[in-house]
Length: 196
Image (cartoon, rainbow, N blue to C red; front, side):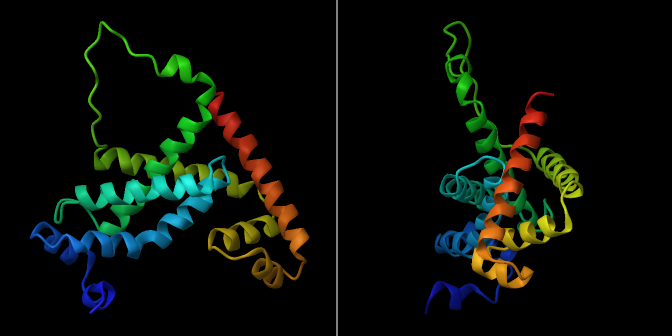
């Protein structure tokens, strides 16, 4: 019996309780189950300056952290918690890659200070990050034409250029031009946020 057949009828919270009761294969099942969510989020972040494969890897790390840190009964649904962890991990990676030009200054180690220990973000920080991301998305969305909005939505759903072209009634070159225009708008928007 495959993991999918074994676990697909169970709710995420039940699966996580099984994981805590020493069923480690639940982790593999949840990583596989939520990989499409990771890929969808990576496509969003890719538009604002990330590398898609790197972002998927970062998203999988965020998903793994969500699986390890979710506490049934303490937080809302696992889906919401996982989405926040994935988004935060990717967003942090994008911000870090945008700061590469300052790497020598940002990565020095002081000999006078105690090393800082990384702490997992609390759920309130995750909610605030999600709200900031949604506000940003709404600001960006308000500046797009109807055609750009449609192409963006289809692109984020994982549709190919050919599929998008057939939906909007244009050729693939027009789709590519629209996506390139979107990337420029989003990149410009990202730079204006960084300078504030």
